[in-house]
Image (cartoon, rainbow, N blue to C red; front, side):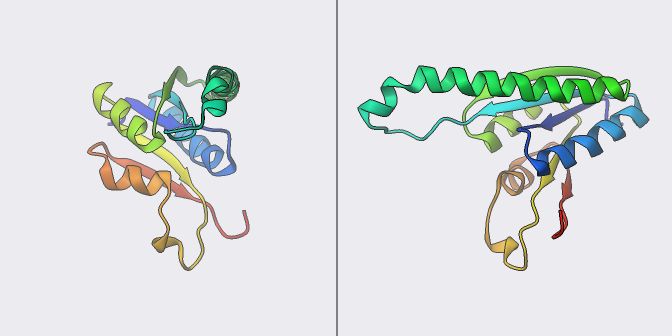
Length: 146
């Protein structure tokens, strides 16, 4: 059913909740988990001073992403799940949807923050992925007390 699962991961509480759910599901189904960290640099155009530091900023994001993907890899290993890591740069929702489509993912599994009574008026990465992906998306929303 779901042989290849994409789990976008940035180390946040909501990403951890989604990743845990996804890895537990992968363990039950014998699926491979593909962890994805998206480097989301500040938008252009940027001031010259900011652009001069862009390479340094990118390196920091890459190091952080590598650490987070390693954490996700360890969680997968603890559950006996095969794991592959991916890193991309761009708009998180666009990169998630593109990787899922181009690499033949069967499902995207994401956590989502609790957004209160007005949550449906505010958009987030998970909501944009749900609205734009042709690949099925499983979301795990946090409760108000998490």
